[in-house]
Amino acid sequence: MKSMDRIHKINKLIDRIENELGSERNAMIGDKWNPPVVKQTYMHPVPRRKDQIPIVADLEYPLWARVLDFSVKEFYTDPLTYLEKQLEMSLYRYEVFRDDSGLGRTIAIWLGVNFEPSLLGCRSVYPDHLDPLIDRSLIIIKDEESLKELAAGEIDIRNSGILGLAHEFYDRIQETLPGDWKVIFPDWVIGPFGVAACLRGYENILADLVLAPEFFMRILDVVSDKMIEYSRERAKFLGIPIERPNLHHDDVNDQNFSSSAYRRYVYPAERRLNSFYGGFQYWHSCGNVENFLDDLLEFVNLVMLDCGGWNDLDVFLDAFKRKGIEGVGIEKRFNPVRDVIGADDRTIRDKLRGLYNAAAGNKRLNLDFKIDGIGELGDHQEMVGRVNNFIRISREFGF
Image 1 (cartoon, rainbow, N blue to C red):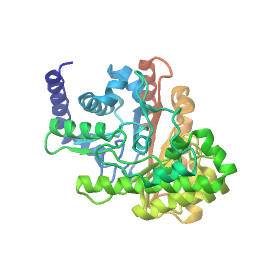
Image 2 (image 1 turned 90 degrees about the vertical axis):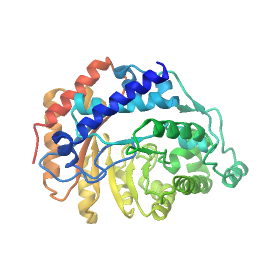
Image 3 (image 1 turned 180 degrees about the vertical axis):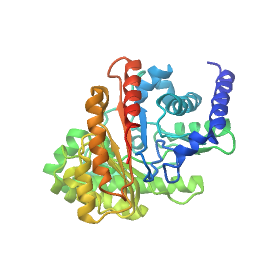
Image 4 (image 1 turned 60 degrees about the horizontal axis):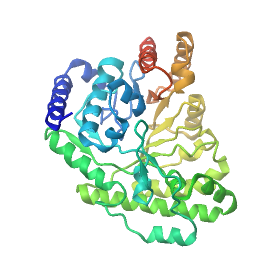
C-alpha cells in the first residue's frame, strides 16, 4: 500500500475511534476501571468492583495477522503498518469481541520480546509469520570476563540494539496521529531472569543456577543494573520522571524454580528493582507461580498481580487473606486451550461460576478476566468465534 493511501486509511480509523470516545458505551466501559481506563500493552489499570467482572480479550499477533490480513514481519518493522493495525485491533475488540478494553487516544509501541536483549548485544530475527526472536546461537555472557564487559558498557538511547527502530516508530507515529493522542515509547518490561536467559543461553543459565549460583546471581544483578540504566535514559529522553514498570517474567515459574530457589536466587534482584522504582505496576508470569506467591506479595506498591491460566484463583485469594493484602488488583487469565478453545459451553459456565463464587467472598477484591495466548490453533475464524462465545457466556454472570 502506498504511503498516502495508508495515511488516508489511518485517518479514517482515527475518525471512527474519535466518534466513539464520547459514546455511552465507551463511558460505561471506562467506569469499570481506575485510570488509565484503556487496556493496552503497557497499561494494566486496576478494575473497579462493579456488578460484573470486566473481561478483555487479545490474540497473539500471528493470529491477528490472519484476522486482519497483514504481515507479522512488516507489523514489527514498519511504523505505519504497526499504527494502522493497532487501531484496527482496538476497533475489533470494541466492535467484534465487544469486550471491556475500551477506546482511547493512546498507542503503545511494543517491538517484541527481543527488544530488551537487543539492547545488550543480542541479534534480532524477524520471521515472516512469527513474532521476532533473538538469535540463540549468539551467547553474550560466556564467562566472568564477558559479564564484566557487559556491565561496563553503556546503553545508547538512540542506537543500542533496535532502539533506532524504536525512534523511527516513535517519530513516525507521533507525526501521523493528532496532537492530543499519546505515543508510549518502548519501556523495559522483561524481568532479569528472562533477559539473562537470552544473554547466557537457556540451558547455560539453568545449569549456572545449580553449578554456579553466585555467578547466576551476578548475571541477574548486571541485567537489573541495565534495566535501571535504560529507565533513567528513557526518562531523560522523554523529559519525564522514571515510571513504575510492568515486570513480565514468563520464565519465572514453578517449573524452573522451587520456592527456596526463587527466594534465594531470583527474588533479591526483583526486590531491588521493586525498591528502586518504588513499586511495580504489574507483575506477570504465564507460568504457575503458586510456590512463591507469598514472596511476590512482599513487593511494595504492587498495583496488579497476574494470575495466569495455570494458577488457581483460590490459592491467590488464600494468600491475600493470610498476608492481609488489600488494594492489589488481580488479573485472572484463562488457559487458552483448556478454558477457551477446547471448552464447551457447560465447561465455560462452570469455570466462570467457580471464579465468581470465589470472588464473591472478598468484597474488596479488584478482579478482571483476560483471554489471551490465542494463537494459530486452528482456523482463525473458529478462534475468533470461540473468543466471542466465551465473552458472551461471561455476560451471564454477575454479583
